[in-house]
Length: 513
Image 1 (cartoon, rainbow, N blue to C red):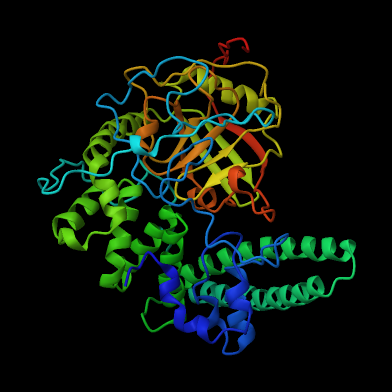
Image 2 (cartoon, rainbow, N blue to C red):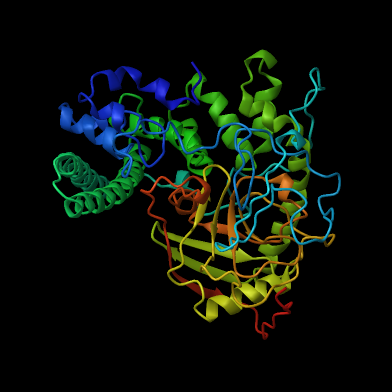
């Protein structure tokens, strides 16, 4: 069984679901649900919570068969950062700081672009330009890696969720009570969702339809948040009493598969690490663990899996990684040297981004991208980003924000700083500039969900997430090129500069075209 297909894990559970509900439900545009919440109770209501919280009715097209998934099919182009998600990325340049030709439009459609709603990008990428993997019979991967004390130490992302300490008896009791409270609310949300569906079906006019739709979206949003809260509580309880026979283990395990399927690889790898350090992981989880390890810069673990796995047993996701593995792993060693030096100096600017999902803290690379950092700090201090949405969030790829609807952005452009010899490259949690071509950046940025070698040397990486990556991964999926009509984008509630160097930050700008 291919463990990437979460639906394959729950077919048996779905067969016993409420008639007509499991078949018509979809969570935004997510795959059909795993049965995590079904274990919260023995009645149909509890199972229905799993259905509804992993699925939502396709509002506006209720009579139509919902699409299988919002994840683009192989070769399908994604705008702004137009990477074919199910196809291998283009082979990285030999020099990560390769310069692209200047011009009014990018040289490829695989580049992140600033959205101009009045004149959207229309050029089509050429999927044939992407490499289709390395040649067969390649030599085993041999990359000398710096051994870290443990995955996700202070040089990568902190604080790691697997570092949770066992709870005291009193804390565990309080956490279990909170778990039950949230589980009960989940069941309550299900009941309200069912009532809302009935109200929609029997609405007599457009006002009742609109009211039902609005209420459904509110419940959907709360359901998402409550379910993620439930996962986090289960994780805390499991760490205190690890056992494969417990409900909490099953929630953590199934959560790993769902996180991986949804492209939340940082969260998936944290869950995998917790399981490994407590009760171990099943053999069927190893393929998922290998890909998650690569996305989270644990390259030695990925190389080990590849070396001990029959090539015929590798799935497409592993084969997509092979052509870029040595490039990315080598650049990670360079990145670690940067981070070691930064940890010693401990003086880089930092920003706290409060979103509707949670708080994300970011460290800014002033040494390598001083002008981009100055621009970002200036915009934050001018309250530019408050209440702006994450208008494009592509699963497993990136989350983009900073778009105001004004095609001129902040009223100027800034030059790229990605062509310098010491330019940083993209890894999990990297903060980078979105633009419509060379030297056209302004205020838009994106947070990377993993290595993006085809963007290296083309987009200025000017920071990295140092905490709250789980919240960055949980941002609502939004693809403006494939809107379903039921999206609720997450927003930036506030941004605050919490540390900067003692000098004036002056921005060098370029005039608008």
